Image (cartoon, rainbow, N blue to C red; front, side):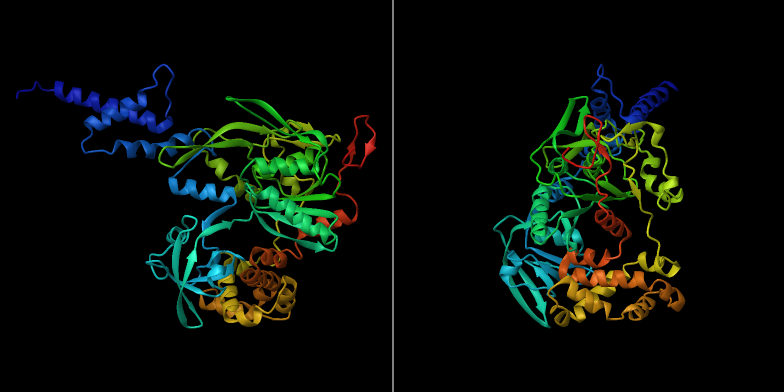
Length: 544
């Protein structure tokens, strides 16, 4: 075949340039107008027909979805089928499995806690048991990761899995019938003083409101008349439980939040006046990781002068996502609206469409700018001022600024301690100590009893010798300087091995500056910021 010189190569160049141009535009911003909605299909058809190798177009489409969503905002995301199922279980507050907590610090799974009355408890599995095999799946050695473990231990309700365990050097098989296993969203709740309840919420799930009411009810029966609610490191979750919780603390017809989006006309959600905690003194603890639904609740309490907010500026997420399931079980979590606190402020911090590195570096920037150490370093958030019900000035546009600032705790944080905290050596040491002393430590029936024993047990230099074997040189002066911090974390992790997160937080937070400040406010009767009734007279009655 004879070809005229130039024409063929020019045609090839134009065709290749056209394809590259289309794909380049697709990869840069995926912008398709309503007048020409088939650009994407046209490009994919061109690739399918003309690309040098065979292409799985369906897979190519699927791989483009995450990139498409990240052009919108930082919180619209694609969830694979597995991730979607995992998130659904977490947000629902439970899953079907065998009902154990376990540790994987060793090369073998070691059971640390058994769900009372759960599948493993009924099958005779106990804390300290080594799980060697589930069905035909080996659970130790190389190639066994958390995903593998989760896949084999979870399953359909009523399904059976035979678990091979080792206990005291002897192996045995236990027949476990999988069942519903709760995933509590409350990490800890206890009386921090005879009349002061402490409740820590880890995330907002479908069971959070019910868990909270039950927990606080138990604590009130023990004498609690005031509450410290800890939302630190609570990154959010479902919106509904945060609204339901806020409703418990507010009088009738008070706005909790407003929601508005292109497909969602502006809606205001208000309290119904049926809340059972309208009179209880309340202090809310927040930090830079408190986000989303945690900010909804905190914003409602602050705007109505209902509670003192203690801590550091919150994350600043004021966007609402809805999940949309796809045919294969995957999903997209799409931003559909913005929310506004009762005073009308948006908590959302600034972002740019596409991958915004500044957005993801915000917390690091706060650290570098000194904001975590000094309230004077908190930015003005654009300068727009809003007013609470009592006339106090608050700000939007970048998280919630607390009423009382608490700096990052750096006591004992020297170069030695920083190396220790960058490793997993404290939880590893605490687990090995717990495992070696399981029989004697199991005799303690309460966290307080175990904590008192550990306070009398000096483990710091034993830990330092352990850390030295893993490459952290023993520095006596630095260890002495950090001894209180080291001891606190060792004791907390040991308690976690016997009393789960309840024990961990109870020992970790006994001298926490947030909590000490909250206790002081409660005892001084300063949990209700100054508020005004409709006539403008001063009042401290939260129901006024």
